[in-house]
Length: 229
Image 1 (cartoon, rainbow, N blue to C red):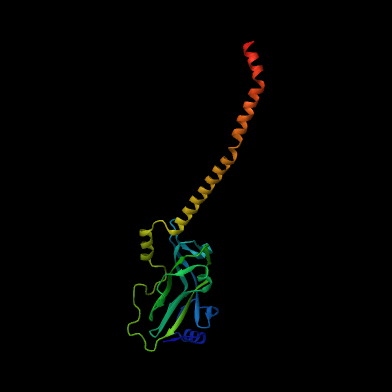
Image 2: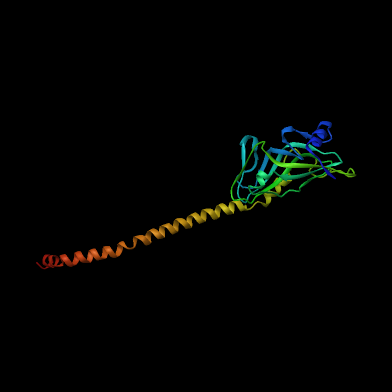
């Protein structure tokens, strides 16, 4: 099985061996093709869910958040070509990791749906139509006798059953846990600051007592004279 070069990819697309709807020649690398962020995104945060990135413009993936991303391109592979999927290094270096199956089987047709998780230290932003994953194409020495005909064949959107799974299993995401812990930490810091402020103010109490006692001592004869006549 041989890795296809940029010229081989261009030639295969030109001949219709590899079909890429919304194909852009500028996305071809020396031995791969960069797929762009599609319209449909599913975020596991409770208040977001399924969103249209073309309307939102930029989607964000929070620390500890898992999202489903779709590609703008729609692919169709012949029986003798397989694809290998990976995140672009630009996003991998920011802490995103790909949790979906890395292979596109020979015979597959449809958009790609990729599960991505943010293990980095910051929120990661991806604009609509931004190249975010890269695909290598490999020619098989012998064509597959049983090309792909699985449940994701001809998909044009994120599968409903995948969305339903996360809706049913949805609990507090790690991102929400991190946010809650952050709020708790801020509250603790505020409390500590308040306690420190009170401690710093405690020195005033002895001073007040001394002042009161001193005044009482100085003016005691006058008070006694006043009350005793």
